[in-house]
Length: 77
Image 1 (cartoon, rainbow, N blue to C red):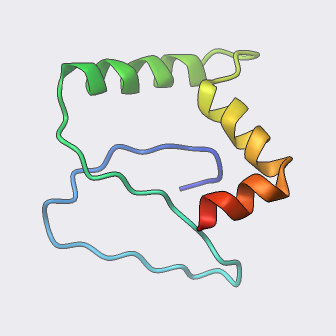
Image 2: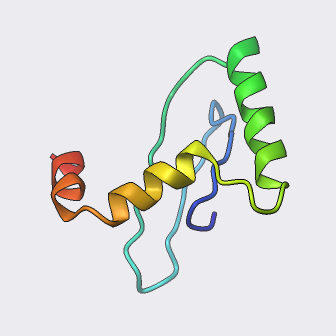
């Protein structure tokens, strides 16, 4: 799982994660039910990610957060 990527995982089975690096990592996890809308949204994101030069909504949000220390603090509260 690299920075800026998103993943859909079925975590209904027992699982665990281990960070083997020396760098702290933060992952946003959303527990949800997969429906047609979510599946279409995931598929659209995958298509966009495969298109060079097309910036996703997530990437714009990511850049906004990285450029605004006050927003970073607010999101961590």
